[in-house]
Image (cartoon, rainbow, N blue to C red):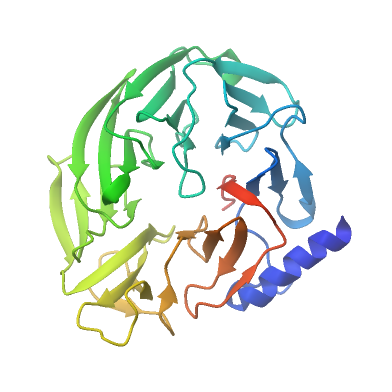
Length: 333
């Protein structure tokens, strides 16, 4: 086990040297992976090591990790269950109506609100929200109010930082935005085209239309849209870093040398309209997602899990095989 952890750390260090510390590279948060045998493994930070955190008698389809890094909501073929990974206690949330995700590995299909008081899941018909209707210190004592959302088969779910809004992606880059009002979810906006979206604040969503440009939408001001960048370039994968810098990939439409599925790493600092060109080479953007913190990317294709340096595109597969889905624990500041 010690040798496996050492190899794991060394591979990351080789792949992303820009982010290494003097005492070796540490993951920005605990990494949870779901393997095709239906079990969840947790790759802890530092000397925590690797552990299996799911019941041996359950075949898990998808899962989400609570903000406290203790509770896990997971689905099997016939139930949605809460699991305390430290005590191994489990509690049934839903049985017959738990449904299953339409896809896995593309984004969060079981998404906890940042405050840990609601769980959103994708279903075959759309989505389902479980809201804690009676305040309690632990999810084990919650009373859930389930709500169905039926605007198409959702692919992934993104809560706003304060848990007041929920963005849901469906096929063809379409997004639906819901506002949480107490125990209800109200459809408040639709985005007909967005190649990636990210919350810029509790009420502002940044998205990149497929036809080009980068737009900021203010949900507290009647969905007012502000053009951050014009449509002379196409952009994708926006991500807001903790320091307020917005990073994303771009490619000019008149660029005949860069391949269509590639892009250069760019950035916009808070309060600035000047682009930072930080990429050294164009990066292949197929099946990439930002790792928590935005320091590197994850490439997830056919069960192979790789770290990708967004600046130079260098990548290396981690010693994690047969992965079908993954999630991050809370980021330590």
